[in-house]
Length: 233
Image (cartoon, one colour):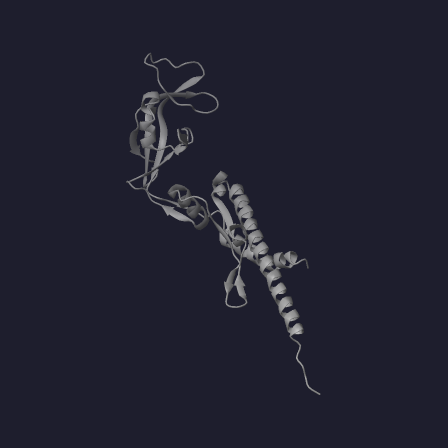
Protein backbone atom coordinates (compact mmCIF):
# COMPACT_ATOMS: atom_id res chain seq x y z
CA UNK A 1 0.00 0.00 0.00
CA UNK A 2 1.60 3.29 -1.06
CA UNK A 3 2.20 6.02 1.57
CA UNK A 4 0.99 9.48 0.61
CA UNK A 5 2.33 12.29 2.82
CA UNK A 6 -0.15 15.06 3.59
CA UNK A 7 1.11 18.59 2.98
CA UNK A 8 -2.05 19.95 4.57
CA UNK A 9 -0.98 18.76 8.01
CA UNK A 10 2.46 20.33 7.58
CA UNK A 11 0.78 23.55 6.50
CA UNK A 12 -1.39 23.56 9.61
CA UNK A 13 1.65 23.09 11.81
CA UNK A 14 3.46 25.92 10.05
CA UNK A 15 0.44 28.17 10.55
CA UNK A 16 0.32 27.21 14.23
CA UNK A 17 4.04 27.84 14.59
CA UNK A 18 3.84 31.24 12.93
CA UNK A 19 0.89 32.18 15.09
CA UNK A 20 2.69 31.12 18.28
CA UNK A 21 5.80 33.09 17.33
CA UNK A 22 3.65 36.14 16.52
CA UNK A 23 1.98 35.89 19.93
CA UNK A 24 5.38 35.72 21.64
CA UNK A 25 6.60 38.71 19.63
CA UNK A 26 3.57 40.79 20.61
CA UNK A 27 3.91 39.73 24.24
CA UNK A 28 7.61 40.66 24.24
CA UNK A 29 6.81 44.11 22.79
CA UNK A 30 4.17 44.77 25.44
CA UNK A 31 6.30 43.41 28.30
CA UNK A 32 9.45 45.40 27.46
CA UNK A 33 7.44 48.59 27.02
CA UNK A 34 5.73 48.02 30.37
CA UNK A 35 9.05 47.31 32.12
CA UNK A 36 10.59 50.52 30.73
CA UNK A 37 7.61 52.59 31.88
CA UNK A 38 7.75 50.96 35.31
CA UNK A 39 11.47 51.70 35.63
CA UNK A 40 10.92 55.38 34.77
CA UNK A 41 8.03 55.88 37.20
CA UNK A 42 9.96 54.15 40.00
CA UNK A 43 13.14 56.11 39.28
CA UNK A 44 11.25 59.42 39.24
CA UNK A 45 9.50 58.58 42.52
CA UNK A 46 12.78 57.68 44.24
CA UNK A 47 14.49 60.83 42.94
CA UNK A 48 11.63 62.96 44.26
CA UNK A 49 11.71 61.24 47.67
CA UNK A 50 15.50 61.79 47.75
CA UNK A 51 14.93 65.54 47.56
CA UNK A 52 15.94 65.95 43.92
CA UNK A 53 12.81 67.88 43.03
CA UNK A 54 11.81 67.74 39.38
CA UNK A 55 15.17 66.41 38.20
CA UNK A 56 13.51 63.06 37.59
CA UNK A 57 11.38 64.62 34.84
CA UNK A 58 14.50 64.51 32.65
CA UNK A 59 14.25 60.69 32.69
CA UNK A 60 11.98 59.11 30.10
CA UNK A 61 11.64 55.89 28.13
CA UNK A 62 11.03 54.53 24.65
CA UNK A 63 10.45 51.06 23.27
CA UNK A 64 10.15 49.06 20.08
CA UNK A 65 6.39 48.94 20.70
CA UNK A 66 6.12 52.74 20.65
CA UNK A 67 8.71 53.45 17.96
CA UNK A 68 7.86 50.88 15.28
CA UNK A 69 5.52 48.29 16.77
CA UNK A 70 7.86 45.57 15.50
CA UNK A 71 10.50 43.29 16.96
CA UNK A 72 14.05 43.02 15.62
CA UNK A 73 14.53 39.83 13.61
CA UNK A 74 17.36 37.47 14.51
CA UNK A 75 17.70 34.85 11.79
CA UNK A 76 14.75 32.85 10.52
CA UNK A 77 12.81 32.59 13.80
CA UNK A 78 14.72 34.53 16.45
CA UNK A 79 13.76 38.05 17.55
CA UNK A 80 14.42 40.67 20.20
CA UNK A 81 12.30 43.45 21.72
CA UNK A 82 13.59 46.33 23.80
CA UNK A 83 12.49 48.98 26.23
CA UNK A 84 14.97 51.82 26.78
CA UNK A 85 15.32 54.27 29.68
CA UNK A 86 17.17 57.45 28.75
CA UNK A 87 17.42 61.20 29.37
CA UNK A 88 15.23 63.55 27.37
CA UNK A 89 17.82 66.35 27.54
CA UNK A 90 21.44 66.91 26.55
CA UNK A 91 21.84 69.91 28.89
CA UNK A 92 25.26 69.53 30.52
CA UNK A 93 24.11 70.84 33.90
CA UNK A 94 21.15 68.47 34.07
CA UNK A 95 23.11 65.46 32.83
CA UNK A 96 25.95 66.22 35.24
CA UNK A 97 23.56 66.56 38.18
CA UNK A 98 21.87 63.25 37.40
CA UNK A 99 25.21 61.46 37.06
CA UNK A 100 26.48 62.85 40.36
CA UNK A 101 23.27 61.97 42.24
CA UNK A 102 23.11 58.44 40.79
CA UNK A 103 26.80 57.55 40.69
CA UNK A 104 28.34 59.93 43.23
CA UNK A 105 30.98 62.50 42.34
CA UNK A 106 33.73 64.69 43.72
CA UNK A 107 33.10 68.29 42.75
CA UNK A 108 36.11 70.55 42.30
CA UNK A 109 35.91 74.24 41.41
CA UNK A 110 37.30 75.78 38.24
CA UNK A 111 39.05 78.37 40.36
CA UNK A 112 40.66 78.19 43.80
CA UNK A 113 37.32 77.98 45.66
CA UNK A 114 33.92 76.39 45.35
CA UNK A 115 31.59 79.08 46.74
CA UNK A 116 28.35 78.05 48.44
CA UNK A 117 25.75 80.66 49.36
CA UNK A 118 24.99 80.82 53.09
CA UNK A 119 21.56 79.90 54.44
CA UNK A 120 20.77 83.60 54.99
CA UNK A 121 21.39 84.49 51.34
CA UNK A 122 18.96 83.49 48.60
CA UNK A 123 20.05 80.33 46.77
CA UNK A 124 18.72 81.19 43.31
CA UNK A 125 18.76 84.26 41.10
CA UNK A 126 16.89 85.29 37.95
CA UNK A 127 16.83 82.48 35.41
CA UNK A 128 16.93 79.89 38.23
CA UNK A 129 20.73 80.05 38.32
CA UNK A 130 22.60 79.08 41.46
CA UNK A 131 23.74 82.08 43.49
CA UNK A 132 27.50 82.55 43.10
CA UNK A 133 29.81 85.52 43.74
CA UNK A 134 29.70 86.27 40.00
CA UNK A 135 25.87 86.21 40.00
CA UNK A 136 25.89 88.32 43.17
CA UNK A 137 27.89 91.05 41.43
CA UNK A 138 26.06 90.80 38.10
CA UNK A 139 22.66 90.91 39.80
CA UNK A 140 23.29 94.23 41.55
CA UNK A 141 23.54 92.77 45.05
CA UNK A 142 26.68 94.78 45.79
CA UNK A 143 24.51 97.89 45.53
CA UNK A 144 21.60 96.45 47.53
CA UNK A 145 23.61 94.63 50.19
CA UNK A 146 27.28 95.53 49.88
CA UNK A 147 30.60 94.47 48.35
CA UNK A 148 32.03 91.03 49.12
CA UNK A 149 35.17 90.82 51.25
CA UNK A 150 37.16 87.58 51.51
CA UNK A 151 38.52 86.48 54.88
CA UNK A 152 39.90 83.14 56.16
CA UNK A 153 37.34 80.62 57.37
CA UNK A 154 37.24 79.01 60.80
CA UNK A 155 38.43 75.66 59.45
CA UNK A 156 41.52 74.74 57.41
CA UNK A 157 40.90 74.79 53.66
CA UNK A 158 37.97 77.16 54.05
CA UNK A 159 37.38 80.80 53.12
CA UNK A 160 34.45 83.15 53.68
CA UNK A 161 33.01 86.05 51.70
CA UNK A 162 31.41 88.57 54.02
CA UNK A 163 29.61 91.89 53.75
CA UNK A 164 30.19 94.50 56.44
CA UNK A 165 27.64 96.74 58.13
CA UNK A 166 24.33 95.44 56.87
CA UNK A 167 20.91 95.00 58.43
CA UNK A 168 18.74 91.90 58.59
CA UNK A 169 15.21 91.22 59.73
CA UNK A 170 14.85 90.59 63.44
CA UNK A 171 12.37 87.76 62.79
CA UNK A 172 12.05 85.31 59.89
CA UNK A 173 14.19 85.30 56.77
CA UNK A 174 17.29 87.47 57.05
CA UNK A 175 16.65 89.57 53.92
CA UNK A 176 20.04 91.37 54.19
CA UNK A 177 20.17 95.01 53.11
CA UNK A 178 22.78 97.74 53.08
CA UNK A 179 22.79 100.02 56.12
CA UNK A 180 21.09 103.31 55.17
CA UNK A 181 23.38 106.31 54.63
CA UNK A 182 21.84 107.87 57.71
CA UNK A 183 23.27 105.04 59.80
CA UNK A 184 19.90 104.46 61.41
CA UNK A 185 18.53 100.93 61.60
CA UNK A 186 14.90 100.70 60.58
CA UNK A 187 12.26 99.19 62.86
CA UNK A 188 12.11 95.40 62.75
CA UNK A 189 15.71 95.09 61.60
CA UNK A 190 19.02 94.60 63.39
CA UNK A 191 22.56 95.69 62.56
CA UNK A 192 25.21 93.10 61.71
CA UNK A 193 28.83 94.21 61.59
CA UNK A 194 29.69 91.17 59.49
CA UNK A 195 27.32 89.09 57.36
CA UNK A 196 28.48 85.76 55.89
CA UNK A 197 27.35 85.61 52.26
CA UNK A 198 29.41 82.69 50.88
CA UNK A 199 31.49 79.86 52.26
CA UNK A 200 34.38 78.68 50.07
CA UNK A 201 35.74 75.13 50.07
CA UNK A 202 38.37 73.42 47.93
CA UNK A 203 36.22 70.45 46.92
CA UNK A 204 33.16 68.53 48.01
CA UNK A 205 31.90 64.98 47.57
CA UNK A 206 28.35 64.31 46.43
CA UNK A 207 27.07 60.88 47.36
CA UNK A 208 24.69 58.91 45.18
CA UNK A 209 21.08 59.18 46.38
CA UNK A 210 19.40 56.83 43.91
CA UNK A 211 20.53 53.50 42.44
CA UNK A 212 19.17 53.24 38.86
CA UNK A 213 20.87 49.89 38.20
CA UNK A 214 18.95 48.28 41.07
CA UNK A 215 15.72 49.68 39.64
CA UNK A 216 16.56 48.40 36.14
CA UNK A 217 17.38 44.93 37.51
CA UNK A 218 14.07 44.89 39.37
CA UNK A 219 12.17 45.96 36.24
CA UNK A 220 13.91 43.25 34.19
CA UNK A 221 13.04 40.64 36.80
CA UNK A 222 9.36 41.40 36.13
CA UNK A 223 9.62 40.59 32.41
CA UNK A 224 8.55 36.91 32.74
CA UNK A 225 5.44 38.00 34.64
CA UNK A 226 4.64 40.73 32.11
CA UNK A 227 5.09 38.31 29.20
CA UNK A 228 2.83 35.75 30.86
CA UNK A 229 0.18 38.41 31.47
CA UNK A 230 0.45 39.63 27.87
CA UNK A 231 -0.12 36.05 26.68
CA UNK A 232 -3.24 35.88 28.83
CA UNK A 233 -1.91 33.17 31.12
